[in-house]
Length: 421
Image 1: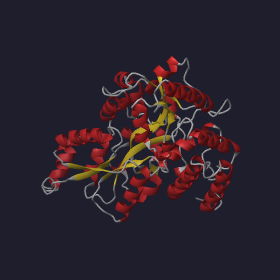
Image 2 (image 1 turned 45 degrees about the vertical axis):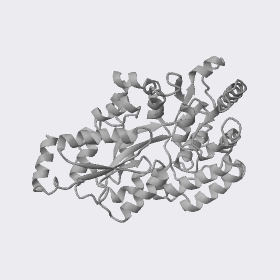
Image 3 (image 1 turned 90 degrees about the vertical axis):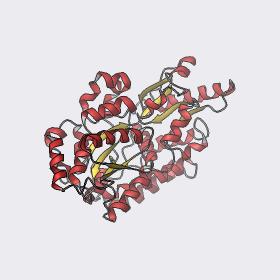
Image 4 (image 1 turned 180 degrees about the vertical axis):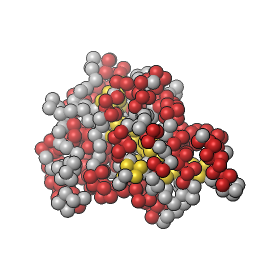
């Protein structure tokens, strides 16, 4: 029925649409195999519909991509029909996006994680469909932990000790490039994710609570950032201050790190045929902040949205529905370790065979901590930037956490206007 509707739509346009060389345009990320998988999915839809689609690659940096989208949408450009948007952007970009519920029924949307559909529904409008979800996880070298008689760490303090011991022992044994721990410490949205995991795991909250109150200046948050700052130049290289996801993965996958914080996509790449660490990788939940802390992985992931300025919103919505479908999400999960947004896929035998930790860490994905984007609305980008600037200063040794966080608290309180975002 859906293909029949598309055929009728094309006929209604009297052939003028098909004659265009670039019928639709979609933005896709290029992190890992992301661009390749997007191309394959788009090609499959195009072969079924006969509608050409141009893929537009956008920056891997979420901050740079967000700025690009803001420019494009502010100009009301129709150059991009479908945008791949971060889980924290629906509230800010909603005025520029169509209501997908006009094209995608409730029988379809109820198959997805309720939290994600809720996240993408702004003022009663479904402005994006969940494509893949992620939560931060800890990768470790199984072979090295076994060699040195360690079990995987459950606290950040244990990780620090284990990383230091193995790193130093490997260097003494001639592996001079070995690092204990790599993560995302560049001044961008990725650092917001990493730092929020540290702070929340220590019981330090999530920057802004559900009531809109700024909560970052507290002893637990200070302790979390003090520990993280101690890693720089010890178990983490100084260069980590400029690492994003791919640079972190490059060090770990080349065999030069014991631990890595990253997203699930790195699993498939780390176990590729040409990977030096193939078969040597373990994945667990990120550590707790001490005995009284808890495991905390930040909710991430990407959605597909249709620009309000698209000339062909119905066709664009159809492509969105195709790319976020059960079959397409299963293909992406097995080929690239991209977390599905449809819960039943976490019980699929093929998916679990390709990425076994999807089953063991399902609760981590389902209960991941959210960044405070809904409560802060269109101020979130500023809130996040102020946070990662402050954290970067702490990691770089420019300020202590005890100085940086009270300053950050005051800045965010001025932004919030007494909790009224």
